[in-house]
Figure 1 (cartoon, rainbow, N blue to C red):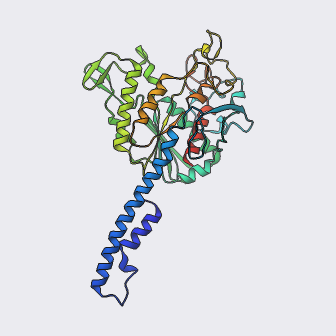
Figure 2 (tube, rainbow, N blue to C red):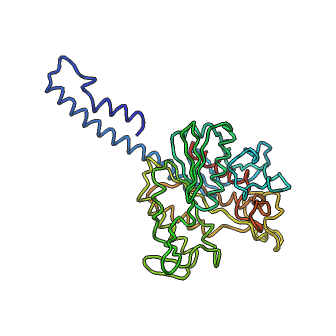
Figure 3 (cartoon, rainbow, N blue to C red):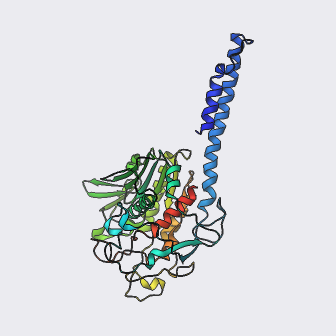
Length: 396
């Protein structure tokens, strides 16, 4: 409820404080009070409906503002279609001065020899992407709770946002807690908590007598997501893991147990369960919901015309233009299908194409203690900063 609603409720529900006229007898005052109170309840209901409708309008057209050229957002801008341009004003922060970056994303600390990848900005084709303003973000979200929910790509984005804010208020008082599934940083002077809830699949993995079971129609851990003002979800990275790298032994769906399942089919079922959870549990007047589009990998250089034996290692520049030669990612179609059928508004951060163009932005061999070549995650500073720039722009 906004301040205007609160003021009206005080004025109308307690009218004798304002209309205690000596010319009105007690009976007349009571009748007048009842009439005004009834009117107030109707007016407040209309105000609450208007707030919800405003949020629905904020989102309904923006979800469709995807990676095609047609645009119909509140700013008449498709943030997700454009190209990467050299911009010496980037990066937005220095990794050496941000206390929140994990080693696996800290490419400069662990010897990446080139720095050109730090100096690219995303330019939408039809407009300018607003510059991130950390102080403004803190002010707008003061006293609130923001939560990222997902896998290590959510970790990547969470740490990026923390660094972007830290660059604006480097001396701000913060408190950090990390343990189990939940991590949190609180900016004490603003009362803002920015949290990360690690959830590999969004749906549950339960240890049972037969082993670890991936339950495609269960989200018990969703209780931890309630009570927040902004939720940013992400999933897909782990759905492709097989063999010893997958953290489950069986799949369960509608009381049927499977040893395995087509991963796109399983992803669709899991996403549909998540969508049902959002539709049943989220009040859009209180909580805004975002879903991060599919973050791509760059292990196959032939996708962008490179050598068959190469990956993202030693790539130093993005792909030019607004087209990725390797095509789209099937999982993105599933995300869009699920979101389009939901009753509650969800803003799709459709970052897949703009991320596909950044074959140069991965840690590769410079991800701290990470073994091998990492072409799944992203260096910080780097690409996730753009995800958060768009998040910021969408919230303005």
